[in-house]
Length: 111
Image 1 (cartoon, rainbow, N blue to C red):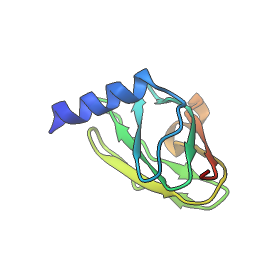
Image 2 (cartoon, rainbow, N blue to C red; image 1 turned 90 degrees about the vertical axis):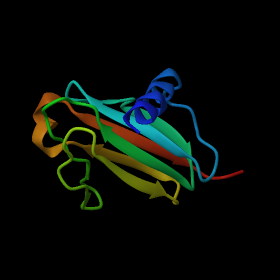
Image 3 (cartoon, helix red, strand yellow; image 1 turned 180 degrees about the vertical axis):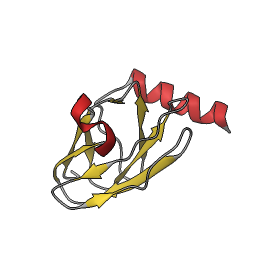
Image 4 (tube, rainbow, N blue to C red; image 1 turned 45 degrees about the vertical axis):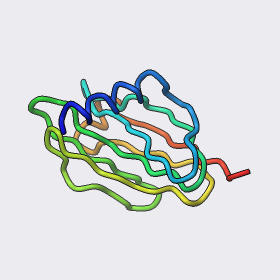
């Protein structure tokens, strides 16, 4: 299972910022106190999965404009959120916000 997760994460790194088809899941890695990719454009209906790839550090995913947050994610744990409404969604990791661990999701309407 871990090998599959790593393969999916590597594919996500090779195609950062590409919009996904409706119903797809896009992976964002949490590694080295950063989100990779830290900017992403997707179509409405796409699910984003944040995966903690660290060895010892925990992170979370917090959307301050909506007060939506994941629980603390330990290594190999993940959080998913489906984005159905077009818009710009800024987020950060609360424990590492001061280290610049920020990201943004841009959701565009379906054609």
